[in-house]
Image (cartoon, rainbow, N blue to C red; front, top):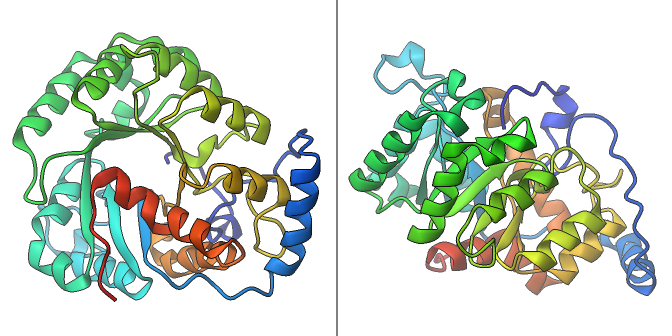
Length: 326
């Protein structure tokens, strides 16, 4: 997430976004009617209480500049790990601007062990904010990525690339974007991409398998409001496309439970969704508890096995994270 300013109330939501969500023009027939009926009773369901896998976490330099004294670190390591621990977050996909934040998390082996948090490191494509709008054509980004992949981390090798942004879908065909999509598939690295639905098709077309083998985690599952029907279409086309649900417009309704069309989609693809915090600004760290409580509320309205998959199992299976002990 980047350069998006939301009212405080939107920053608190586990799966909502800025502004009103557009209604999805999707007729689900009996499945929708069933989902709606189940949703009526979901609000009274108990919250999900199992482990959480935060699949979209940033430890950016606004939270902590790791080569400066305390004034440059409003959220030191002990603080962020305490937030994870008290919310039952037992694993994270760490990607940060710059990558120093991810390396700091990966290096804090004793602290993360005590907190019960497994760090899954990704190489982010940004050294600073200027890279947001230029990474897809800057060859020095490829050099940085290859250097980071060779270097690895104390928590193990990097497992993915991103999060990256494409504010114009056509930039998915930039020379560096093409090169990194092919590299990720070749090395079986996940991609974490903040893009629209048009860019999903373009990015996948730039892989050797045309997206059949590429693991792409779609940040926010279309923050611009891609319809449920369009998300369904893309999931059917690309078997390793995964939806991450932070900031997703229209995900939850007024009672904090899943809206009927999204509930039906999650039930259709229980192995294809994950949750995330998207701590792109410090306010997201300050409201981390509320974000996780929001997820636990609507997860509790799902069948227990589906809730567990979305909350934990899907991420753990993708990255080989063992089941945590209570």
